[in-house]
Length: 619
Image (tube, rainbow, N blue to C red; front, side, top):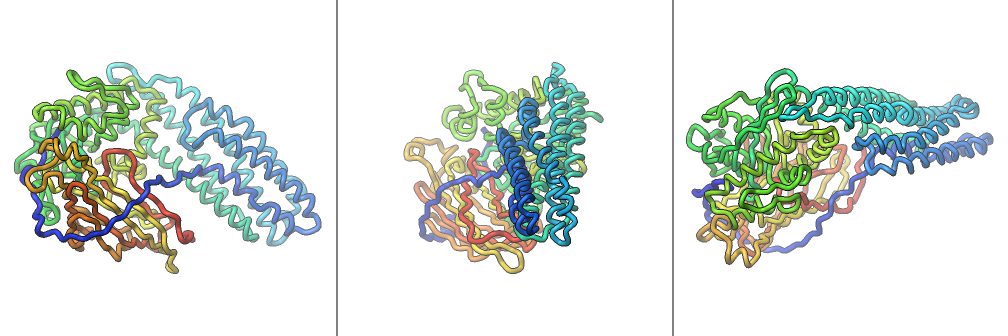
């Protein structure tokens, strides 16, 4: 599919052998439904309030139970939607709004009755009453004002056809959706501000319930604000103010580079007042030579690459990658103005095939939402002559991207939006806009994929770069176990991390596979990856040990473009594995669990297991 680096080899004599074995199950971290807990947080311990208020507490206690029952019923209604904050289905919203309103309204009425008003005047504990009253107001406003307005607008917008034919997008429904979400966002931000300004409860359990509800509502407000920010720049992205040109770098993760994979082909797409046109893709061989090499001294010090279009994703910061790719394009015969750069891999293409429909390659296989990634990352090198591989890949990438914007509807736009977030988180797609205000929105969505930089949302980076001229990273299976081991006095947390790398090359492929996949000479069937480890922003990595049956260089401290990291080389032969154990400590400012940012594999499963925590994060 793409021209590999034929000149790259690794000196095995420089690698040391260390032995250790480990197996780890792969479990996806739990995904929590956020905003139903806002309802639950209102009344978790209203019984405690009744007790605290003394003799009149019995009647208050009964009313508190009624509030609890109504809000619990509202929660059960919401559970009909798997993830209410992401749903764009007006029929589903209509189904839950009316019964939800009945319960939240009843709870609000009770909480503002005479006894509650009297109790709210009680010194100290009156703050607890007013907090509960305020929370019932916020939730009822959400049910009676915000959701109905969103539902009504969506009913109109969702029935609109975004496609005006000939690659033209009807902009009016996009603008209507943008305005609807902006209105909803304004209301939710006001509701969040109101909840945040409620009196601070004094009863411990009520305060805990309030704090939990506030945290969950903050998440809702943040996510909706991100969506609003994205929709606010969508018309510009679609060329409302004039033509835009975006580059699309198609990369193969079978030959890893930190941000994704070896660049196989580069194409362009343009938008102009809602019109969309997919340009041609060109093979990486058209972007070779000194004029196509863009790098820093730091790049060359860390990697033995030529840094033409094939190697630009060696930098784990896609912001740098995008600038360099644009420079290479503008120095080529295809030069145009560039407004942004997107990188995609076969896993992302497979998800688009699943969304748009199967792709029949002329004189080739039928690609589906299940087999596309395997074909483009492995089978193509076995079944298709090298001379035709670029043509196949360019055909698939061009047709899939073109189909994505054809016959566009709001439903399809929503499906694309839902797809983008997990694909960007796994680095299967990245995007940088060269318009600063717009790029902030893409960054907030996680699309710009930089190195770890947020102290409050800690992550550590683990990036891989194939040094063997091969497509052996298809056979690299990575498993990572992350377990919180201590919550430190300064507010930081420490986690133990175990990484297992396995060469999963089958015996049949080892015996019969082509050199293009396996590499040649003494490195046939070897995975030789240069591995970079980045600590969380404001944090550290310590106590690093290596093991397994593979050959592993002694880890070294290094620097890439001004950012410190640890690097090593793992040479994993057929049937071998490598293990890495280390501790990661976050910044004292961390407010969330540690996550892993890593080079993508040829599938959606991240191979990350978040183990049972030894302590709870205290904010």
